[in-house]
Structure formats: structure tokens, C-alpha cells
Image 1 (cartoon, rainbow, N blue to C red):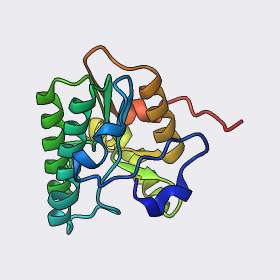
Image 2 (cartoon, rainbow, N blue to C red):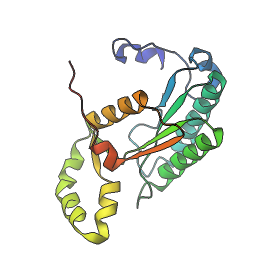
Image 3 (cartoon, one colour):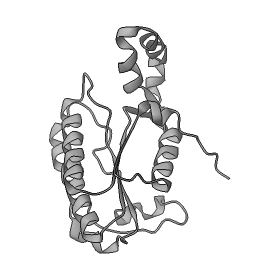
Image 4 (cartoon, helix red, strand yellow):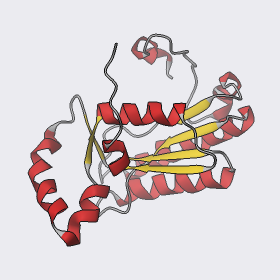
Length: 188
């Protein structure tokens, strides 16, 4: 995390300061038994941010893989994106490249592939829900509607927690249908 973000950490989280684009700045703070969850990326992705994806998203996954290999982590969770999709080609290309790098590393990996996450400040796609409903009922568009469906922040959080608590033996891909079925835990 960046030092300015320390106040945003949840209780019990261990802060590790560093530059997400430079493995050496955080690799010694990772314990071998840890699960590394990669959440770094360009804020509010859009089709017009191709350069930022190459300048931030790709170097950050490279640095995280290098740090994970250095530390000998047990499990790597990569927040990727659903693909293929009709838009966001540059974003999807960088995320697919990140997935390929992680596969080549030999690390035990979980790829979490949402399309759009609904949450604070991200509610406008609820207006698309009726369209998704129609697309899910039509045979030619059903698979695409499920693969590129909307998920909530609570579903994403539950998915990530489950992935941390239940690492795979090799590689695992968690797509939108699985994210949407995640058991959402209520805060105690």
C-alpha cells in the first residue's frame, strides 16, 4: 500500500508500504505461506486508458509475480477480467498477458474474472439489469450475458475471501457465474 492509504486498511490488516511497480520495495515483507492477492490496476478502467493499463497494470503484475517468487508464496490470486468481451480490448489484453505471466511462473494461482463490479459510486449499470434479463433468456446471447454479468462488491469480497481460505492445487478460474453465487457473509 501507499503510505497515504494506511488509514483505509481494515482492522487486523498488516500494512506493507511499497511501490506496486517495484518488487524489491515489498518482496521481503511477504511471508512464504502467504496468499498474495493482486488488486492493483488503473482506477475506473475505460477504453481510452490503454497506455495506463500498460504503464500500471502490467508492470504491477510483473512486480507482484517477482515478489511472490522471491518470497515463495503458497497461492497467488489475480483480479483479472472476464473475456472475451466486445469492448475494453486494451484492458483485456493486458489482463490476459498478466494471466499468462502468472501461468508461466509456475505459482499456484486463482484468476478471478468479473466484468463489472457494482458498489459505491458504481451503480449506474443497474439500469442495464432489464437488458441482461432479456439477454439471459435468449439462447444466442445467454452464455455471453452470464459471462459478462454484473456482480456486487459484496459478492466480489466473498469470492476473494473464499479463494484465500480455499486455495487450489494448481490453477483455478472464477468467473462471473461463480462470483454471483458466492455466499455473501454479513459483517458480525
